[in-house]
Amino acid sequence: MPQRSTSPPHFSDAALMTLIRSTPLAICITDAEGRFQMVNAAYCQLYGYAEEELLGEEFTLVLAPEHREMMRRMHRAFIETGEIVTR
Image (tube, rainbow, N blue to C red):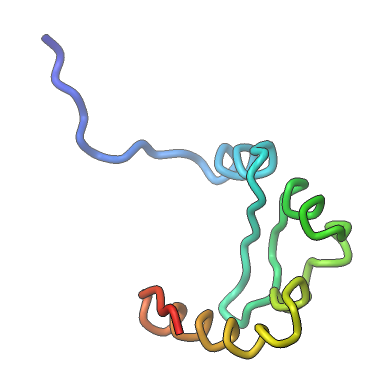
């Protein structure tokens, strides 16, 4: 019986981008400052923006104003520690 690999599969950047762009799940990628670097069509449809309206903008643009500061703090904490903070 062939032995199964226990290491995660390796995908090229192009293959990952194709997967992200074609999935029906809303996905965005931000930089460390929280600016959109990539959004897929499902994300744009969910929030009602065109891709070019979002790229380079802060991810909190799509959030209710009362939640923006909390989400900025959570994003900053994740970037600094790699851990998800829920407050």
